[in-house]
Image (cartoon, protein in one colour):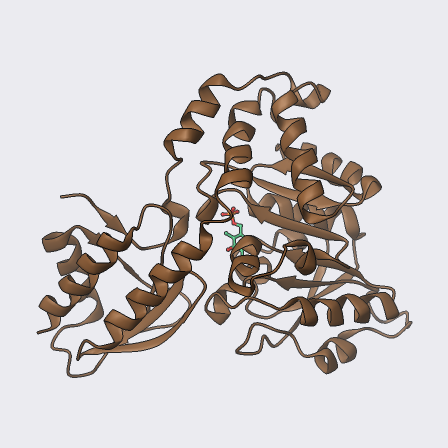
Length: 346
Ligand SMILES: *Cc1c(COP(=O)(O)O)cnc(C)c1O
């Protein structure tokens, strides 16, 4: 039985076109800027997001950290959502390695940070306080259930940052999901940001890699940060080749993943015993009713054992299951999952 893996979109494998592109990739030593495929990926990514330059990094975590190291000095502070990936799930790299202090503000249910909270998080010019250097958003916002942040909201934050002489970073791991969900050009979501990180893996299906984009001088500093973090690779064109396929052929189909997530949510919501908590972009959240007859662990175990369907309890909130659709989850898989959950809870 073919496994249906809904635990995350990070489990997506490279497509056949990616494997082919990887096998044929022209390569060189990227530390010498000699890898034509990496150079192409960086140029295309910068153009697509409307920035001057880009740097290919090994992961989203590394991209965000390179950005913060390039933007901030030790002892400076950034304003960031309290449930953001950078704050919660990147080991506090900014503090560990950069001496940068996160000043958190509450993330609203729609994934935004309130401008009044941002305003009051800026430290005054006072020798007791760290200098506030930057504000960061996450789009789509994971812990808000995959919520896309609109171009209007992003423009407000960009304007706020400019008025207060702050830099503005976007953790756009899934920014192409946001663009697809909102029906806008991704540039509308990155305009006004000094830097943006996005993942080539996850929904775009590349096996490895993220890209950090921004101004030319900023990218030069970010490249230095990447080097000290051990992220400067040699014949990285093998990886960038898959990234180019991701960037040029996988963005437009993300709305299929969103459509499948919607169908999945609808189907699950009709099953007695399932309490649907929400669906945005490619995320679906649900819990089991108290009278469902089995615990979350029993439910997950039975789906895996009897149906080869993988789900996992959500680490962010007890009692909840989070599913993410992706390229390898097609319409037939959605139907199988709904049928299996229905059978299990009947
Ligand atoms: C996946 C993700 C990252 C980066 O994760 P890596 O596993 O390091 O690539 C950063 N931010 C968000 C919001 C993410 O979902």
